[in-house]
Image (cartoon, rainbow, N blue to C red):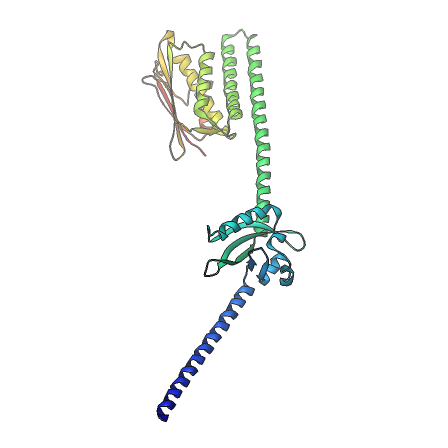
Length: 371
């Protein structure tokens, strides 16, 4: 019996020793875990706090104190509401109510805190809720990231963008005024030429004056379209061509029942001022030539205008008619006509090429690339 009792006591003793050892191991692990938690909590790069349901600060780390300017002891006498900007309190309370009602697990908002020196601190706040096993709320865990520098950068950027927009608006107004004044000045020149032409007796000189007047009117129309355009750097060239040719038909007193106009222009052909004016004058000269020479003695016919642009910004401009065509000895480079010389100079100006066919009617194909 004694031996059995001794063996039982030995077994119980070993079991107790094992339990003590296990409890010591668990206690040591718990202490290590607590040490790691405290190190993580207090040395974190962001502010961390435990906040009571009523908004009192229960536990705060050093980073949060650095962000807010308070010591941990000072924060214990304050609530979350005490340091929150009044305009942000309602948002906080709304999310508090939702997280307590278990409608959301966590939330993040950008808000403003008051620093101890009364300056504004912008933070990104992330909040979650710790509950009892029964579901009863215990406290909030708040993670606070200082985003004041980012907010300041955003404010600076916004101010910079507003300044840029104001500057662009000012330049747009100025550019519109320039277009308007240039158009008015060109119209004045055109009117002066018209008045002066009343004193010209020689028919040849009169024609030159009228052609010059029409060319100036074409340039004035470009500035008028730019003035009316939403994009002050470019005009919708399709719309411009229709107005230009309509003015030419009126100037030459064309019988629209006798000479038809067929325009085929790709949508979205927009040209800047440096390209639009040369192109407008080229079209002016080519259409004028058709109106003057293609349909003698009241002959019926059609004038065709086409403009196409491909994805490589390569533009093809075609002005053609089904009139009597060109004489057999026609040479574009050698002809003495001012109009053809002007066309040649304008094509060189836009770094383009021209191909002229005149066996059956006249077809002038101008190609160039938008820069």
